[in-house]
Amino acid sequence: MRDTQYATEKATSKVSYGEDEARMEKIFVKEQEQEEIRFSWWKNGNIVPRPLDLPESDLLQLIENGFGNVLSYEFLADLRSRIDAFLTKKLLRGINKP
Image (cartoon, rainbow, N blue to C red; front, side, top):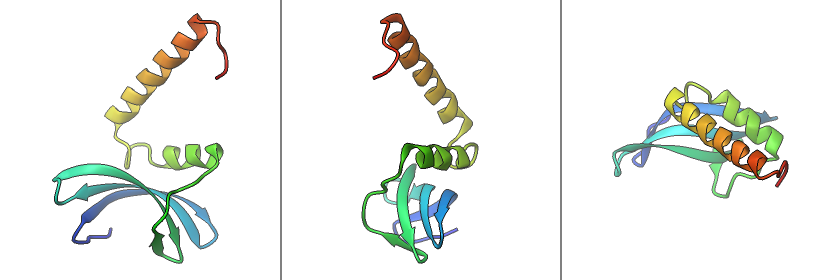
């Protein structure tokens, strides 16, 4: 796990594309004294300073890879509850797709 002046890496989820990687990381940000989730793109072992762009299928895989280590059980339960509420609301309004 990496440790820099900015943050300490606590857990990582990855989807690989050859030597490149999309990552979701749980980091402890030292100045704010809090854990945060970072999405990032890595090329040749170095972080790339640009947004992470992924197709939905790869984003789902990255998130699934983070179940229980990057994303806590409490977060996943809250996410599930919010998704269920959103889908129920859509179904009650008779809207099946966005």
